[in-house]
Image (cartoon, rainbow, N blue to C red):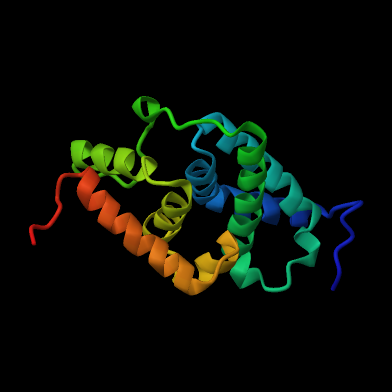
Length: 168
């Protein structure tokens, strides 16, 4: 059944809003990891929501709605980053991780945000959003092996940034 998006049915709007509410945190964290700025991430998420709504009727597999939204968000975030190309103000970052030891979480989040953009995006999607390599690869537009190597390099860099470098 194709949905006519020119005159959306009320239940379709409600279902879409619920999907966006459910995944908005993941969308923001993904955009934040790719843009390096809260403001740019908010712009990218806003654009992603608009684009997702415009093509919501074309979504083939409702079970993959999260990956679909994150893919749209990643594309919008990359476009936003190309437009603005802002640097990451590390001292203004807030944690997006679940509550644990607040200082350790803050230190980790700041270290993650000091990673190169491609590694940071892979880390956020893998560890914060619990996506698999197979799900991350199309979101970032790279091969699974590339995601795996970015994660490996990111873990090594995080060890150094957090002062946990293993002695050889």
